[in-house]
Image (cartoon, rainbow, N blue to C red; front, side):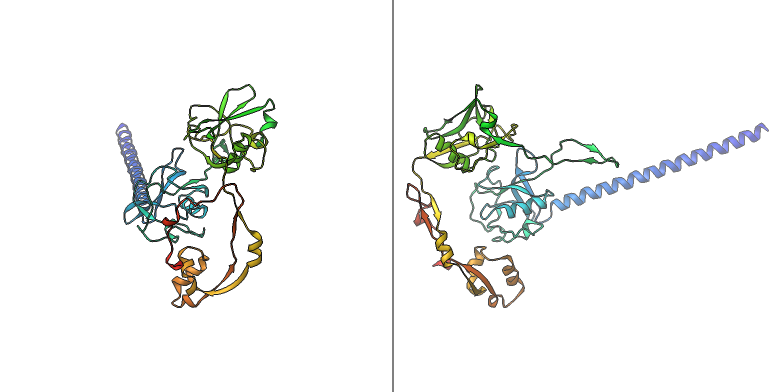
Length: 383
């Protein structure tokens, strides 16, 4: 009897050992399979990032949603020139990177000088492209841009205001709402003083305000434009706004921010009549300082809308006569599609809205282009 019990116990021990060994073997196989899948996904992701036409953002200080645009071609990264760069191109880049869209396109090396040779110049997108490389441009490496003409973007991103768990245990992300705006004088009823500090001359510098009895503080440069600058120059009796600066060029990075989100129409008598953020909200406070350059006399170009209405008419023209306009990206995208797909594209016609554009100078100074006439570049179509 005891011998039978010993035999049965020995057999049960062997069976349990076999089950444990089989279980460990299965677990090892599962782990190995998972490791292979993860490794393949990592290799595929690295390969995807190295595919021709991939883009990335460099130089941004506030996260991966901003920076100068670089694109991969022929196994090498290169910069994108800011000629013709606007929201259409910026949106394509941001969507390619997985963002919802662009907040702002940047130019003139906003996030630093171009680090590499320019791969793309005169980029033109119609907004439907899923990759920047599918937009029209002058050709890979064909560029006349300098190091300070790098194109960049600031893309939209979700802000984690708080994570609530739904029934499935997934985090629900809430998009950050825009700050509430109120008129400056409605919030700061004790009075607001304003001055320019740090300029090379009295008519320029960073804008500082004194709210009631508080200390002097700078104005956040986020969203600062010529509309707000014009109000400041007018309020201080310094004439007209020549430039609205959004950096710490005139200092102020160590001065606390007093107000943010200032928004004017341009015709207000003073900054107190403009809107601003009810609660202070200034990204990148160290370098985001509102400044102005004021001039006593300045040209003011006004479009002659009467002449436009008098001369406007429709006209059908063959694409053969519009080649100059096509080179300047002045024709609808459908025309370029016809050019690619049809041998007789030059016989196709486009209906144009033609008019005479006349611009008058209603300012107090002569208008002078930033580039003197002897340095103008004349297109061969115009010769």
